[in-house]
Length: 263
Figure (cartoon, rainbow, N blue to C red):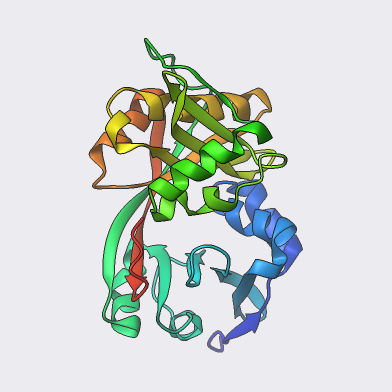
């Protein structure tokens, strides 16, 4: 049998991606959502083996200020995908087995282990949850003010948030907004909860739990599972999600190659 021939192609086959998402909605959620709703901000690079797609890079050119490359579908280093990664500075989110090869290809880097967590059903009820609700356009000034007061990667999207079309939940302490969560992806099978943030002075009082649970319940009410990504060394956040019923389904590595950004 002749050896396989691997090639790289710009773009992605939408039918193939939809089939992947049907079988593994969490892994391919961002790719399918971006292809449908933000094609002007994303670029795909597909690895083909004897003409058949086997893996891809999802490269996001929105927020933050550098490209973010997601390595999907192949859990071993491949020279063609490594070469297709954007030049420094960039952020790459890759399988653990690929991290060392990316470090060599784009050194120097800083790396952070992250976990993909999924909720199988509606979140567990927790006692004494603080007030939380889905936000409306009238809340826009408060959301943007909180984001501007705490300039972190996790709050970046809130600085230009459109509460007419985006799903964002907030928790309140004596009437003041102190915690946020948003649905970065809303697909029939899965919602990716992102931007989960609590004002530092309000942490440890279940505000983060309240907004996360509310988002997860809305997803479940529409037949979707809630999923999210958390730093493995953020024990407080990881334990909070576990108390709600989230479990880890994948471990990946966030690689900062000159961007200065952290997950």
